[in-house]
Length: 179
Image 1 (cartoon, rainbow, N blue to C red):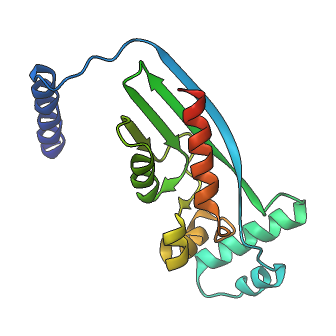
Image 2 (cartoon, rainbow, N blue to C red):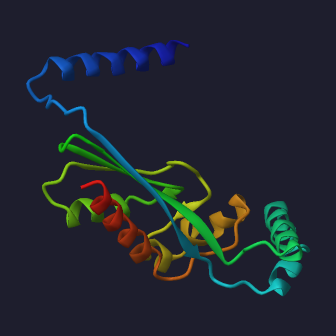
């Protein structure tokens, strides 16, 4: 409780300082939003690989194998994920792109680079958290965020190459919708 109170007071002090400062810019009350989804494709994993994973000593690998085999047996889609993207505009001064999942920072950096002078905030963990959403850089590096984290999320994976371009195209389309 002591730490929560300390951090809460610190946050409150910062808000008060910002509101009193001359750096505050008014935002008009016009609100516009747009929501869409896009399919993100997973690399194909042979059923035999999941059957082999049932014998793993790692309980998380076993769990994911059971989930994937159940999905296959029920005819569920394990090839793509329906990914949510949302745009919100407040007045003409502020735009937010809300991306599902635990997105890597590359999406924010690239969006700000490709839309200079625009006040755009890119948020992750929005509308749904299904797994890590890697950029091409992270996907090429491999490792936890691109590959092995999918085990703990109970998802097939990793994603196919091209994920970043699909998401960036959707960001462009979303920003057009919320001008």
